[in-house]
Each structure stands twice: as structure tokens, then as C-alpha cells.
Image 1 (spheres, rainbow, N blue to C red):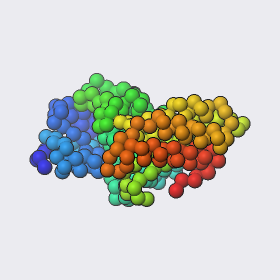
Image 2: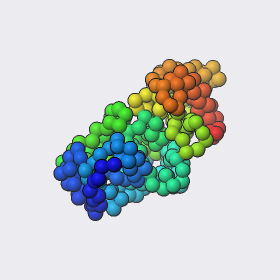
Image 3: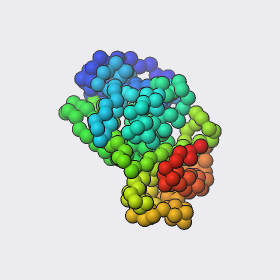
Image 4: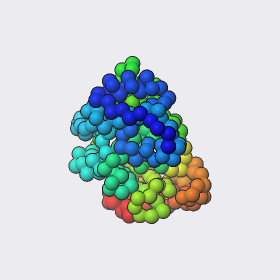
Amino acid sequence: MTAFEYVKPASLEQLISGLLKAGRSGAVLAGGTDVLVKIRAGKMEPRVLFDASGVPNLRGLHDEGERLRIGAAVTMAELASSPLVRAKVPALAEAAAQVGARQIRNRATVGGNIVTASPAADSVPPLLASGAALILAGPDGRRELSLAEFLTGPGQVLLAPGEVLVDVVVPADRPGIRSRFLKVGRRRAMAISVISLAGRLEMTGGIMREARILLGAVAPTAIRAFHAEDALRGRRPSAALLAEAARLAAEEARPITDVRATADGRRRLVEAWALHLLQSLVDGERRCV
């Protein structure tokens, strides 16, 4: 492991200026559950490591009525246990509760989970399903960018030099909207996703007015199953229709074979669990196991 300088900025301004000066040799430490593992494995070799835990701007959960603003340094444990998150964005609370063990959830942050840009990041599918946006701060001020635009590939994001993720802005589920998150791993707990799914369904008068299906760990980034969504929109749910939408979702997946599963195995899982997800959304019950 390469030696590095440890710096703990006291303000957002100090963090931004330090990152700008360090350039490519600087890295941000949030919870450390991913960064420190990569440093020990030799996959990252920062010259300066900036500990963001002392930056007050990155903390807090704020109820803004129709949306929820989440500080980038809010932990998964805080998301999972927050009555506000469970009420406003229940699928995100479900996802946060399934990140690693309790010790990991106490350290891992929502900002770190996003910026790491792992295809299997648990928080990303429910955030994408909700249409989340990010507030970024850098030397030229602040800007807002959709999460979908921010994630460009495995480990790749649209961060400019000296720029940091400050807040995640999530539209709250309106009345009539149901949302869920499902994670499939090789064991029931403390596992990286083989696949993950997030769903968001708006029902009015028995009609599926709007549907979003997000698939994680089956493409370079989490992806929407647009064809499956189109098949559902504006129609009444039926067993045959939900099964067809699940089949379409599996066709849209672009998985790889790795140590956790084969590509074909992932497609089969997507079809089975997408059907499970859609049935749960339509019934309004938590069938998740």
C-alpha cells in the first residue's frame, strides 16, 4: 500500500480547494468502506486522502415537501432507520437496510455509494426510479445534475476537477405511488448483489398510469427496462401482462459472467424477480423475501 497524506478539511471550501490542488492524486474518504479496500488492494494510490467526515455541509436529512434532500455523508444506517426516508422514499430505505452488515451500514454513505459507481451499488436503482438529482459543488460554484447523467460507466462519473457531491435530491413518492427494492445475492445477508431491482408504480382506478423498473448489476450502470415499462403503462394489470413485462425486462438486461453468476443466470433471475417485484407493486404488499 502506497503511503499518502491524510487531510481532514473543516469546511466544504477547504475540501474543494484541496482537491483542486491535489488533482488526480487526491481522493475523498467518506465512510471508507470502498476507498480503503481499494487502497489496500493497490487499486487506488492517492497521494492525498481528504476525510470529508468533518464537513458540516454534507450531513443532514431535509424534508422539502415534495422532495427529500439528503446530505452526501448520510450513512446507510441513517437512511434505513429514518422515519422520513421510509415515508417519503421507502424503496431507498429498503435498499439501505440491505447494504452489508450493521458495521458497514454505520460507515457507508449514500454519496460514497453513488460516486463509487459500482454496477451493483444498492442505493442507485431506487434513486434512479425516483428520478433523483445530485447537487455538486466545485471551484465554479454549484450545479445540479440528474443521477442518470452523472453515472457514465463502471467507476466513471461526471465530476469536474475539485468537484464534490454535496446533496442527493429525491422526489417523494406521491399518493398512489408504490415503490419497492429487491436484492438477490449468493446468500441472504452481507452479499454483493447478483442482481437488484427497483420498481415504482402509479395506480389510478386500477390502471397502471406510470411504471419504472430499474435493474442493477446487469449492465455497466443500473438501467431502466423501458420496453417493460411501456408494456405496462396505461393498462390494467393481469398475470399474463406482468409475466410479459418481466420477460421484456430480462431481454433488456446486458449482464456479464463473473464470479457471482453467469450472464444467462442473471437474465433468468431478472425475469423471475421482476415478476415478483411487479406482483408486489400491484398488490401493494411487501412480498420481498
